[in-house]
Amino acid sequence: MARTPRWIAALLLSLAIAAAFAALGQWQLDRSVDNVQVVEIDTETTVPLEQIAEPGSGVTDAQQGRTVTVSGEFVPGDMVALTDRSNGGADRGTWLVGHLVTDDGVSLAVALGWSSDADSAASDLDRTEWVGRYLPSEPPQSSDFEAGKRSALSVAELVNLWAEPGPVYGGYLVLTEPIPGLDPIRADAPEREVTLNWLNLFYAVEWVLFAGFAVYLWYRLVRDAVERAEAESGLADATVD
Picture 1: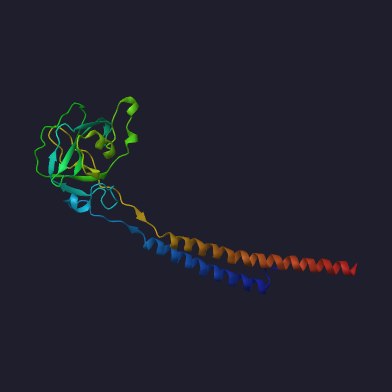
Picture 2 (picture 1 turned 90 degrees about the vertical axis):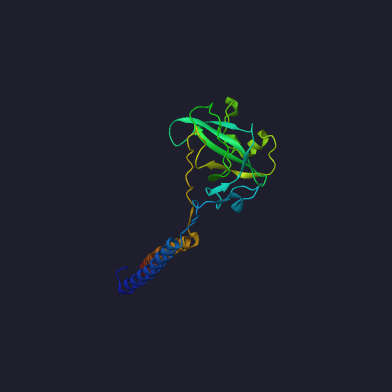
């Protein structure tokens, strides 16, 4: 039945339709790739912190990892040591975190540097301007409080430790150049997300399914024709008997 001219022609037609559907699927796939959007944000051009962030707000994707400058003074006695911090290697050490009050009166947590010695103390805090990378606050749950360790740089937790926090930035600053006696904290620019056009990708899959259905429809029609011919043949034999 499938080798008859009629059904061979129908097969060629279904294959042509399937090829057209497959081409449309390829076109939609190409569009989904061409429309991929990489969110590009200039994180290395230094800008004033107050220009991109506001007190009391979390760190947005556009703000995360930006290199910023801020002017202010550190509050004596509001230094906190965060233990069990890695700095890009296997060794664990301490972050020294200070409480900076900007010229506008806003509190900002500043990671001053890393040290393998937990007793390292701040000595040079007399700069007029501080430069670093602005990062989002960490969850306080990552600290092992049961073991008596504070390791997370959580702004929400630091606010409860500072004497007079006032308005507070939601993120913290990692200094580009640490204070003397401490190593720089490794703070790389964050990797940005790639946005894929899922609608075009869905259409591409849809056209491929249509192509497969075109071939399946030919198969189903041939099978129905065979079954119909067999039924008619059986009916004719029964009539003769």
